Length: 122
Image (tube, rainbow, N blue to C red; front, side):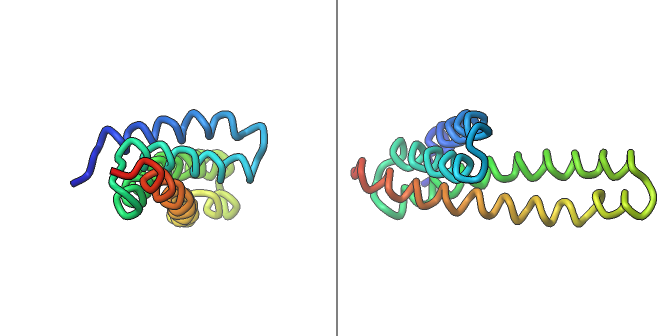
């Protein structure tokens, strides 16, 4: 059964670490996902599989939030630019790219969650 408190803790830690990660682009954001996933897995406990699941959910929740933000920002920018360049930034293309980013954010969180679940154990 999913411990939504653990998922929420992982999500909040991921967001806070992600804000700090802007100081170290790239590596910092991967680290933010790992730290948030670790927090979710550690709070949930229960071993490798349970930690992986909770880290994955926390990362996916954060990824969906980022995807929505990127999609809306791309649509607004596309609308302001207008014409053919505007269609490049707006619409489905931006949401597909954002969904890919969400998947990447969920994967590193799942790895961190697995480590956190193993370290806490039962």
